Length: 162
Image 1: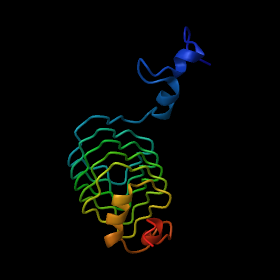
Image 2: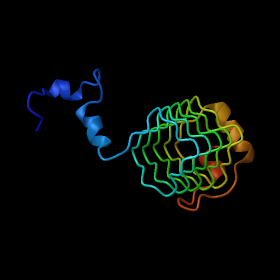
Image 3: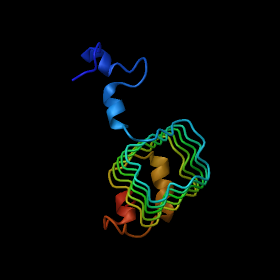
């Protein structure tokens, strides 16, 4: 049931802000959109479906965090620690992930086109069904090795290194 005075069309209208569906999705979640989180410690936290869009998160610690379905679009996460994190189905497009530690991370179905992964460590990471630019995929394949401890998937196979 919609709040009084709210039509179904206006409930989904995102022109003036976030519609009710989006509010429900992020209910009881902190929205970090466009904030500076450099050096912040999010290790081990339950952050599924949280928005980190446009965040400056250099050197931030996301070790072992649940970021399933999170939005990291246009974020600057250079040197951050995402080791052991669940980034499955995350939106990571146009983000800076240079020098990031993705060791043991799960990035199944992540969308990360237009990003930068220069110098990222993807040992034991699972990129199954992730959308990456061909240049990033080739670059990551140069040093990809290991098997993801959570999914049991070979990193090179998940990146389709051939």
